[in-house]
Length: 470
Image (cartoon, rainbow, N blue to C red):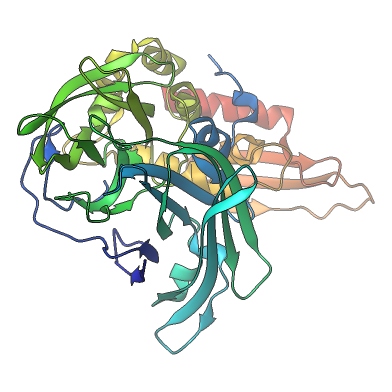
């Protein structure tokens, strides 16, 4: 098959998406389908202390892996998904491997006054019993218009390949290597590729954009969103592409179930994907309100059938925050809301979590006339910045003493580091908040960068903290 390179400016992200084969992603007009129902031809944009909370950080790698995804953290973060779709040959399946990584993982060089360039080499291999069955290695370049884009640490570069292999069990190996340095990432996973004959169902996958196929003779025309993440309060839907094969009649009776991370069913609906030549395909808009906060498992099946295919999507508090389980998400709110409000969210039954979150937002929004919760957005912004600024301290940056003071009170009006006369390593920092008439002293007794509030300052901070919560 031939290679075709597709570069699309999606959602203000960088996209170096490689779709191998004769087809590539295409766009079309949206059709205004209601949430939970397919858009067959449209192009849609993406839209108490919990277990392990003491070690809670902003690295969601373990959670992604637990959900069966490809994931690797620093120093070269990578996220990936694998989807299986029917091909024209009954003994072959289209395997779509999609990965994403941040622009900051690559080495960019200035090409001109308006362009920066980086290159990378992606290798994707499917092996069986130690023998390579399919392998593709491609070299790609990424061009951006500003230096700021080269420093992005979020999911910003997308690479996608289609490999055709017989159904069976495989070992998938994905390697991405920076062209100008020795940095690289390698991730492996065990896969079971299904035989998608009559009555089969393709993998439901969150997409950045997609166009439904008319026939299995063409390649899937989609760009997968590896993270599959929506932001509560900002996104109303998660577009998910779905296919089913050789079903009788003009519609495909499919059942969609959404479960939380414990397996509890949050929502179920019957879908009717338009069918053309025995292929039922379309984009289904999954309402974020049906998932709430945390992890959502999408299971797609036919009535009376045993086979079920699943995929995972995630709903987070903000674009700068990672995905997490529901309880861990609530732990992020510990410096924002009273224990009573957080417990009300925690005690809500799974199916009542979206309504409980809506009530929480209404109760804590200082200006409900606006469409955004400015105060909560500012809180999460401080939380992200605190985690970055104070990450050199022992433990997680946002849970350090300086981190929590910064999250609750913000930037101090004045920061003083007194010069001590003795040779002691007991360094000090004084943060002054003039409007509050508040002075807080931190000390670093060991000289290792672990700053702690003095006992008197701890009392003053807790008093101001409780006052703000009231």
